[in-house]
Amino acid sequence: MADGSAAREKSRAFALRVVKIYQYLQEQKREYVLSKQLLRSGTAIGALVREAEQAESRADFIHKLAIALKEASETEYWLDLLTEAGYFDRHAGTSVRRDVDELLKLLTAIIKTTRSRG
Image (cartoon, rainbow, N blue to C red; front, side, top):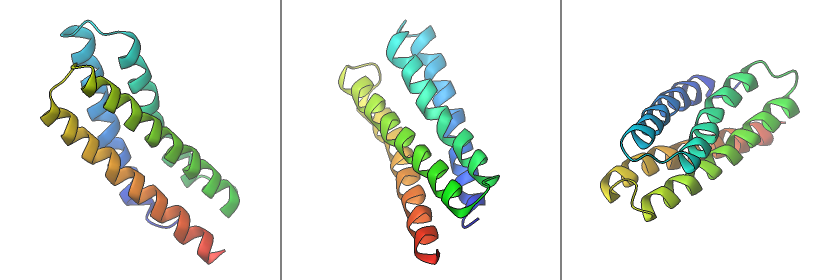
């Protein structure tokens, strides 16, 4: 449906970045609990966007993207917590936070646009 390719590309690139952050946190910082939460929610966004591409209806499409939006919001929480706890510096935290903010805005816009057409 609408803007699927932009959401698909951005969510996949973000998932790859989250995987690298997870590896860094595991190997360099020996952080295992919060990093696992970040990995789960950060990679779920792209999976849900892909799932939405195969939606059975407009309502199903919106529902799947709404779940992706929730996962992005949760990811934002874990990133903030990890940054505030000192697991990575503010610059790195700000950079990845900017990426998740873009995803939040993009998913919100796609959901709103799809609802208004319906």
